[in-house]
Image (spheres, rainbow, N blue to C red):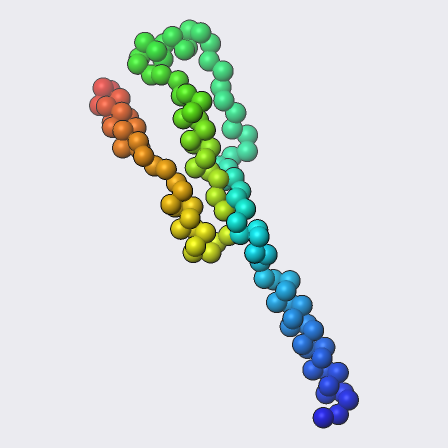
Length: 112
């Protein structure tokens, strides 16, 4: 093997190893979570006392802060797209009580 071939092989090896290290994801990041957002500018609307009373007259109660926190928890997912991390997100997702909410929505819509 001559000197030129050896230099080319070493350069190719360095480029390949550098590319693999550059494009491979970092392991600790896969366990971190990020918040999913639909829109960045979603802010709650402040209702006047008359509007709040009208909603209560219709039987519509405002969301409690606990329910709001549950909704925010559903938006926290892991960065990684690995199967194990997706499965862990699915296992941690609490959808209990979802059927009750759907029934209430159906009841409200059937009144129209």
